[in-house]
Image (cartoon, rainbow, N blue to C red; front, side, top):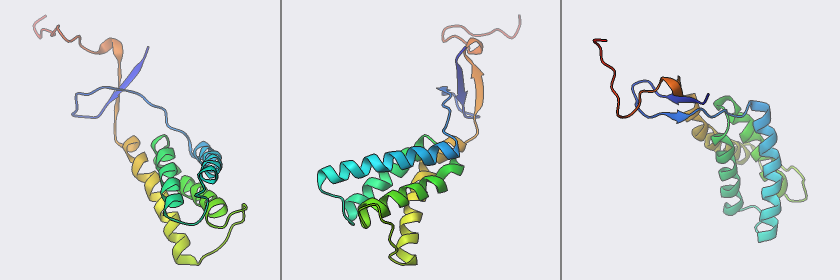
Length: 143
């Protein structure tokens, strides 16, 4: 039996999507961040700049879309670690540019992950397929 979900007051039914837990979201982001570093290196963009920042922000947002909202700080931290180690300071060395720039990067990655994970937190109700009314048939209240 397939489960569907719908928002209260809405009439659209969508398949239930299981979101990644917090620990798995961080792991997936770290592995994907390493793969993204390989791709950026192949493109010749493995240096501190706007392209790497946008790429890692997109990675954080994509990971957030498949995760629960409490995983956003873990995703942001994992994206920051990969961006800092591979794009900004290269050779897998973490560097520190000061509290303001680093906090800004961390906030950017965390916010991107949180914004795309928030739709998963909206209230939904589960509906079983066999209980959905058929499009052409209406139930009679008299019988």
